[in-house]
Length: 136
Length: 158
Image (cartoon, rainbow over all chains, first blue to last red; front, side, top):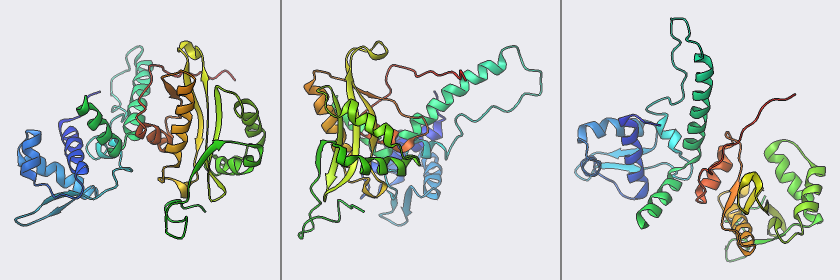
C-alpha cells in the first residue's frame, strides 16, 4: 500500500495538530518538522481547512489549530480528501487479458481490507499508537 | 436513557458502573440493546448464550449495570487451538446503547473480560468484526487491538 505524497503530508500534519488541539501551530513550524516547504504544506492545510479538520487564524500569532473530534475522524476521512484508494481502474479500451477479471477481484479484496483498516483507525487511536512507538 | 456522565448522585458524579456476570433477569435488556443495534430481537439466541457462556470458568457473559439498568454487555471465552491458534481469549460480542457510548462502558467491559482471560493464563485476545462495522472496529482499535495474522474466508454454498 502506497499513499500519495500529499496524502501522507496531510496525515502527518493533521496528527501534529490533533496532538496539541489547544495550540495554534504555524505553517512554517509544521513544515520544518515535516521537511517540506511552507508553500507545499499550505496547499494541503487549505484542503484540511475546507473539510473542517483545522481552522486558520491570520495575523502575527496566526496559524492552524485542530477543530475536529479526534475520536471520530479516521485515517480514511483524511485520505479520502486527497485520493480515492480502491477506486476501480478506468476500463481499458483494449480487449481484456486472460485472467484480468480474476486478478481484479483479488486486488479488490486487498483494497476493501485497506479501506476498512483506514476507516477503523481514528486520529485518537493513532496518537496512542505514536505514543506507544515512541516509548519503545 | 442512562447518561453516565451527566446523571448520578446529587454532587453530579457519574453513576457508578458495575460489571458482573449476566443473569436470566438481564436478558430482556440485553436483547433490547442488541435489537436496537442490529434491528433483530433474538431471544432464543441470547438464552443460548447465557447457557453456554454464563457460568463457566473459561467463559464470560458480562453486563455493565448503572442506575439499576443494563448499559452494555460482552461475551467471550478462552478457546484452545481454535483455527490452529494457541489458547487465547475470543470476544464474540459487545454492545452498548447509542446514548451511553463514549462514557467508558465498553472499555470497562473489555477490561473485565481480558482480566478474566488473563486469570485463565492466556496472553492474547482476539475478535472478528464485519469489515463495514466501523463503529465496533474503531472501538477495538482504540483499545490497542491490531490485525491478527489470520484471514477469514468464505464461500457461498447454497
